[in-house]
Length: 131
Picture 1 (cartoon, one colour):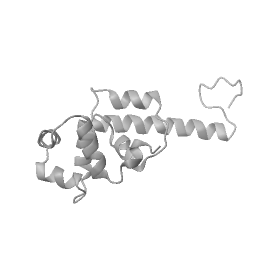
Picture 2 (picture 1 turned 180 degrees about the vertical axis):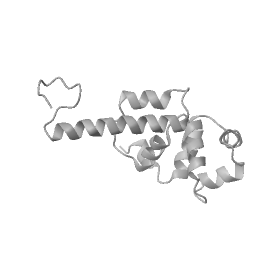
Picture 3 (picture 1 turned 90 degrees about the vertical axis):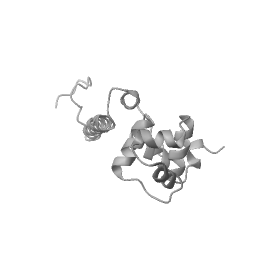
Picture 4 (picture 1 turned 60 degrees about the vertical axis):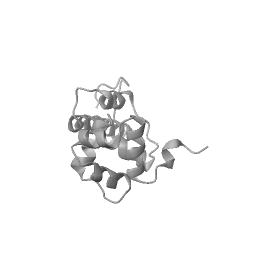
């Protein structure tokens, strides 16, 4: 069986599908994002690529991070931690804040994994081995 996310071949298709899943008419969604209806239509039909600002606004109004949206496009098999899910679902955060928090969290995790690979416990690791 084909994973539903694997059917998205383009960014425009993914945006259109997510907008439809949110049950938002194109005109209403375009107004929410702050772009014209024809521009959104061109994005969804892959005639134009959205700027980073527009893509961030689209993701924010779909209540997800830009990375999560693009991850669906790439069909990345990444395991999303509970922390990232909580950050992505927090309505009190802006898209930029979500992105910064997820980047910091992922950086902390990479540092910890790197220390473990070198045989050094990460700070707070209860393995009993001193640094």
